[in-house]
Length: 341
Image 1 (cartoon, rainbow, N blue to C red):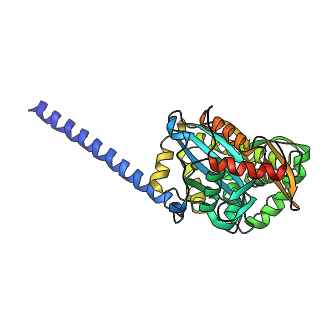
Image 2 (tube, rainbow, N blue to C red):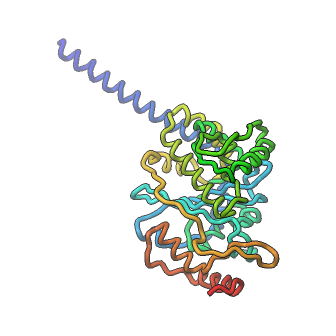
Image 3 (cartoon, rainbow, N blue to C red):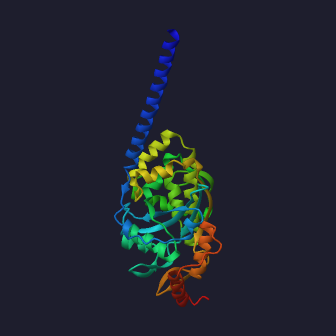
């Protein structure tokens, strides 16, 4: 009799444990849906996005997400603001390796329905659908997902992570302090200036100011490099953050994210967060020339077709990629303007 009682008690305990675990899973899933639901979800333009059947699927599958950092003095996220940060994050679905490719904001590109302009004007003119279409048609990519963030969101996420370590040069110092003043006005903050150059832990405002510098040697090319570095630093600290910090970031930052990634999309990304590693980064176009055309300064790919081939080699390790007819036509038009052969 005692043995039967013990077995029944053990069975009840096991069932209770299973019930509790299921309850925790349900609560956890529900909470995840709740917090991811705080983002500014916009899928209204998804059906108009031009997609390409590219090598990324054929060679194992990649998830390509565009990250837009908008240059908005009032922290707006939708169109009528230039995307001065354009980064393609390509995730290898098998290895979980991530590669980052910055597209220089002044890159001369054919904006669908608008004609040639700086690529950052696509977001200004038509929001995320036009920006993604410009990326896909000019570079033979298949980017359907995007995340848009503003100055305030970047500042706050870095602050919540406890800052990041950057090596600030003497040349960069005055620009960091100059942009800090501007960010204070935009975000309603009162962050003081950095007192000296060197390797140091900086807060969100100083890090964002650093990522905006474009007037040192290297100009916008160097700025894009700084932006990729800041993204890497944020990613590295976020992977090591505790649950309380992550919860704070989610509650503070998610309402400031504009995206077409819904809760299930984010769950698909979040479940592998500890497996992801940023393994390489670059700027695009690789071969370029900065010149004036019609009294406006552009970054011209030299030549576009060759750059696109190299981009597919970098992102997808496809050594034999041949650009589409559309890319080759666009490449020929740009070569006519620049005279570069």
